[in-house]
Length: 451
Image 1 (cartoon, rainbow, N blue to C red):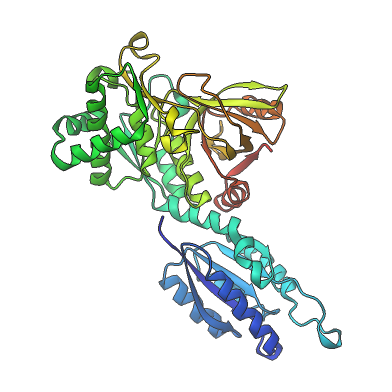
Image 2: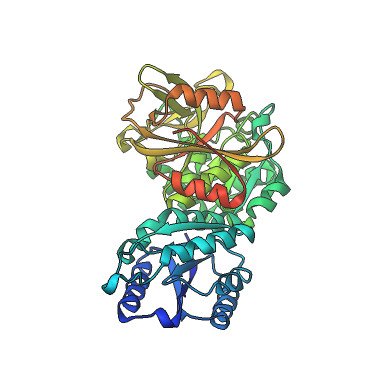
């Protein structure tokens, strides 16, 4: 994940400065420099309109991913729009809590300055957030806003490969390519499965050897799987990697049935999990919005691996539900590696005739479930559901995970069914709710929060 670039305006009035306030600025900037995977651009205090313009023009030239407007003190109001109108990036308003100084003097008036700026950002229709933090807690409290910055930046550079289109009748996998490009900046490369299969059949040398190694190390065991299926899996994995390199892809949505197993000889499920494990987040059944949601969750989490699921059952008695897919989860998310097992697909050609799935239950921990889609009027929305993944036994073929939701499960089911959400979801082992809400606000997406 690339570094994000953040410009810092430290707004003040020169007549308000004291050594104490200057020490606060130094401590704040020092704390900001601890943010992982971020480059902080700071040129000193901004005390007038001319300095505000100079810094804004520098940050624009540097193509910063966001700017922090830090209200060291209450500033001259003209500095705020002078900076904001020259920046096309999210704006993070930052103010310090304070207490009266010597002589009962209100030394900074920091929050009031940020309040004035919020009015300006709202009228200028800028993407902004607000954080109230002492210098030593600045980076931690900015984390949700910075997660949203990473998501905006990441999706703008994202390119998903749609291999083969959606599966028959899965209208839930439909998407609007140009609206996706307009709203997020995300590009889609439409590919034929023929190219992937042809690449797989021609794969040889070091590329094939590397793919065989990945397949060998991806699971602990096999059950009734022929060596030929493992060889086909290596070729298919290597082909998807080669095609991704050719088209500079960051993920896939794959038409994984009905014809691929007939044309190539195996179902691609286990291979799709391997692609997700190596950073190419991959959604089944040609669901581009599903793949975008997976990558969005990874950006919001600052890493990690999202996986693609159906919600298949729920139980109001213990407030749980089971998410699952048929053997395409990344093994890096397994409960125990010893449980990861290559198997023949449970459905293809009537079941247990062709490979290749990788069966195992997923690990417990804090999770967020999400799905980006469009409502019936083509307005963007995103379902956001936090919960706790439980220790899940291997009670079901494929990749099951039982989750206890923060909200009442009936509320979740009523929301999904009444609002007509798609039946595919993405899940990540992280709590990204706050960042997701900020992201939705900035991008004009309706957040549908169930928690």
